[in-house]
Length: 113
Image (cartoon, rainbow, N blue to C red; front, side):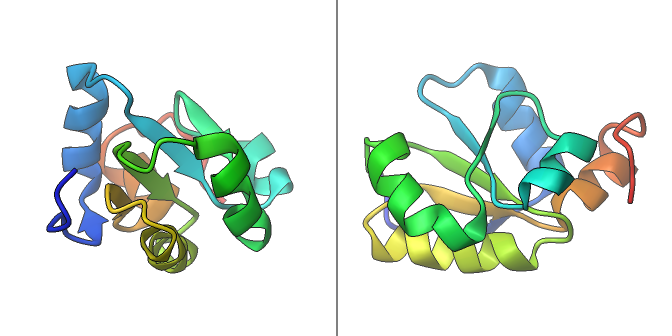
């Protein structure tokens, strides 16, 4: 995996990646469980920011994986990407604007809160 992927990826770019069927692509939701119950992206794995360092080591495994990380508005996911990259997951990227932007730009059926 290249170390030169930008920290952020737009909702549109993330949507294209998800539709491409790229092998090994992971989708990580770093919101709280209550938020995850309201709405989530397809294939999302819940790894709240507070437990992310431990979750990454036990659940993500392959440090070469491409990982899309999102939260509500994009702030927690940026912090999560910093953590993941520090742990060696250089394919981690934050979805700009989080699930809120996804609802606005990609799928208006996603509940907004």
